[in-house]
Image 1 (cartoon, rainbow, N blue to C red):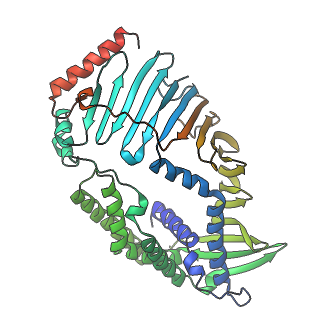
Image 2 (image 1 turned 90 degrees about the vertical axis):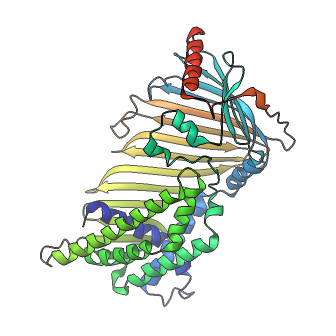
Image 3 (image 1 turned 30 degrees about the vertical axis):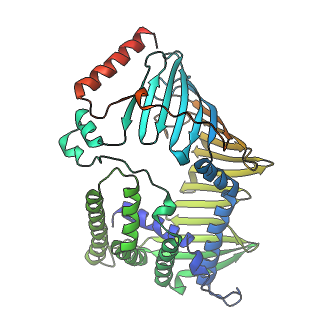
Length: 456
């Protein structure tokens, strides 16, 4: 069996086990008479819910929803230090504007400065079904694209004929996950695959060890058992029309790929799943008991004070360890007990402030840290967003960075239900739709020339 397929299947199994909140509810209410399997299912379900509860924040969810329904003003800045990609060293971008998502309006005045770009000011506008930009001091009107006849525009821009069939005439923006998949569908999928997995796991695959002040519940699967479970899951996924229907609706929501192309890709995915099923079957049939690999995969739950605080996934010399902390989670990947990589995610809440801190380490050295902060998250009248990202060139893990660098983002979102919006008039736009390739080329040549003449 291909290594990549097996790793994928192991990951799917772990994710399915974590999501078995509904399956855990099928067991008895008291722990006294539960089997090791029942206790395992109960604790893995509680672990998943606990981590989600720790990291989730209802006020943040309310804030994101408010930005969709209430007009607001923005005033922020993005800056970089060090080198990253090309000429983005020591870049400074300031912006301010107005946003009214419900009425399809987005305006930002953007100012850019760095060693190569001096005092470049531009306006970005999304209004109804029109996207436009204007470079102040260079253009008096917005260079704009209407969300219509996009295929014809793409053809004028030189897009190849075989690629044009994938470009729609109009993009429909609707990728709200709640409009794509219902809670009933989610619960039905959880029930189906949760029960499928639970029924595939026998009591003798589970064990329990009492050690000091903790209890370790363990699930052990060999290659043959893993193959059998993997086949059941793949076979069901392949024929699950509800699941494929959700996937189809998701890609249709972007309005970029045509329905017949999505259908074609789904059929190709189904064929690939069938190939994986055949690959597993052929591998088992063609190998004798003597030549078969029979590795053991262990999924261990460490329980203390009736709560899971650590999950171990072990396979020979390799280990993945998830530790639940007081306000977050850590992820470790080890080989021969040596830590190769580590991710730490931590949430803190204080007064009217929410902070997420993320650290990524390789070989014990920190090469990236991210801090995401929201002030005013409870009152939600004026929310200050901040993101700080720093990288240290301690390893080759992120080769896209030449040296250590930092990116800072700050933005103040001020809500105003009576925010005054002045929409641009039609005569303020120069539409590219319907224009020839020669016209578009000459237009942008002139813009570049005028930018060069002004030293920007």
